[in-house]
Amino acid sequence: MYRAFVAIGVIIDLLMVGLLIIVFGWILDSWHDRNPWAGPVVTTCWAGALILSAGGPILAYRLRRRAAPPERIVLAVWGPPLVLVGLCVIGFVVFTPKE
Image (cartoon, rainbow, N blue to C red; front, side, top):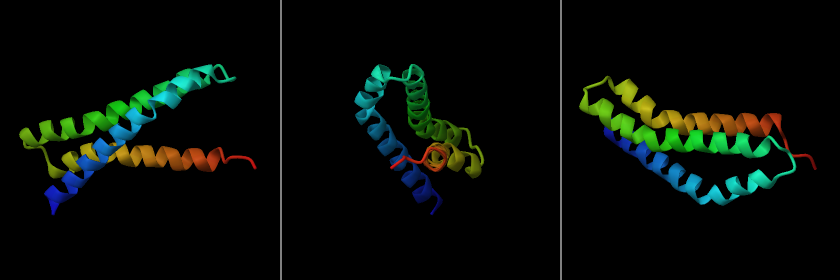
């Protein structure tokens, strides 16, 4: 059960990396926005999410090879998706689109 939980987390991390690579065009387009802060902020958030998502499975593998506690391995794999979902929920609650 533990290995399946970690494997599902790795799959979700890799799907997030694929999604982040697909939306790179919109990230580049944010540099031409009217707000001067939009480009750097969006690019920084995108890069941070990409690094966390791509690095999570690698970190989990290294932790498993060093016989780390299972809690750390699960946190390394499931941490980035939980942080990204939490930030998105908070962002949509705080900055609700105006009709």
